Image (cartoon, rainbow, N blue to C red):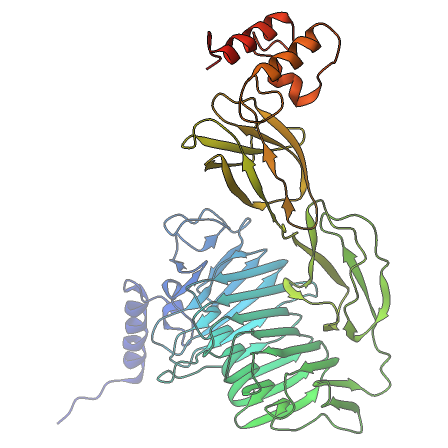
Length: 539
């Protein structure tokens, strides 16, 4: 016969068992809470993981081994009791949820937070492929999160949960007063680009979301502002903007603002603006639904590929476009009362020295004059300058000299105001041709030299075309430039020394053979005469 256990004894056994369980190492009540990620599975700044209790408060720039924050001073703090990662003016790399369980990570925003990912990484905020969920929230307005992801060779996503084919995607919810801006860019020709990728995407309460996806080099395939495997729900009184218009170089790129593979539920929105690239291979929303037409104006402009969804009777909010000279000078007046599309004007600033206008920069993306942007907030348009290309020219001509035919003639170009040569060439032969290529515009002194010759200088001005400058240098003592020093040269030098017929310029320099002091006297005449008679040569 089986023994019976009395009810009060059974209750005592159960209570004792519960006490033993709670006292086991690592088996506190927090660990038993389903769906809450272990701290070691939550990481910030590209893989710096949390740990309880020693590493729960991260400060910007902390190393993996040393989290220096505390509960009063931190930029990212993880609460293992609630599964909440609080960002407080966080500025760092990728945020990840790892592990193999289907956990739920809540990201709470305080202040202004930034996630920046460049190069090898391809995701701003990512979850494991086990169906985990990510919620981004804020308790009060003014709490923001900017996610910027750029990769050269990969598919990218601002928030990814999870686009690997073998993975189980979880959900992404943005709620409360969260204000999230996502800019995702892939420079690959054959990779996709997503603002948000998840199973379900929900934007609700007062949340604001602005997404820009860029695939400027893409030649085919899709890019999406929001992509959901199952459902997208828009149920917020905040504003949503999605720009998927920068979609590749061909018309074979499929560009969709919001794409849900199953259902797209549009309940309410403060205002929603969606841009896409091509009316044939793109759309603002898929499936092609709209907000309740009795309560909303659903304006879809397929010519310019811009769709606007706004509550009826809403006065459009207008904004100011201002201009930043970025080192240039002058002013450009602000443009006020702008809402929606705006065409970028001609540059009105004066470029810095040596620069010329290249493009406008809007949100870090270069835009050409005449490009259209969508203005959903006060916007600063910044001038981008580039170096003025230096157009160069060729200075060439003939070089006549005497003496040895095998010795080099040296030709130098020295910029005005300088003493060192900017350009120099060597040519051989008494009747040679020279060419100096790549000469920048300016005024130069051309110096021509050869052994036993008198150096000669020419002024060469290079402006808007190639320059031809023939040059000739004389042997020392050769006044008339016939290549010989004769009694004819002596007579001319002697006449100068006696003050009868004066020499000037290069002829005067050729006559100064004694001391080269700039003076021509009878001593110079005697030396030249001695050379002419062959009794005492000058060289």
